[in-house]
Figure 1 (cartoon, rainbow, N blue to C red):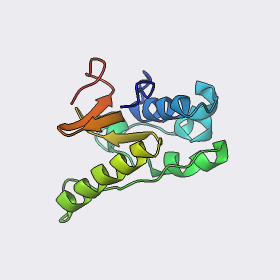
Figure 2 (figure 1 turned 90 degrees about the horizontal axis):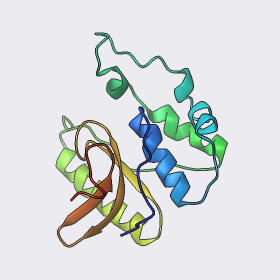
Figure 3 (figure 1 turned 90 degrees about the vertical axis):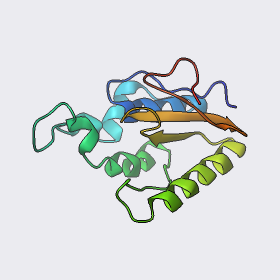
Length: 140
């Protein structure tokens, strides 16, 4: 369990997950620098239906790719629930998170609670602990 690894409150939960990970790694960065550097500040967060789901339906890959411009790298396992190999990819994602956490690297994931981003803080024999919207301190 990494007690200092926590999601940071942002309306854009992906940014909050990244900020929590950067804080954990002691990488000093202002909120404005992060949001601008990963391109989030320049995205119109609307979908084709102009619904409240807009910020959750667009491809955020560019945010992860642009992190190198700010001195950090994001890598991971990516899958949609509709993927034919989803269960295999989901298992691989949790194994990857476990290895990263064991090595002292922060992790975050999508839709661990509701359709938002969460920081994965640790794990035990029962499951994983995460921090984000709708969680108390940690939630299994």
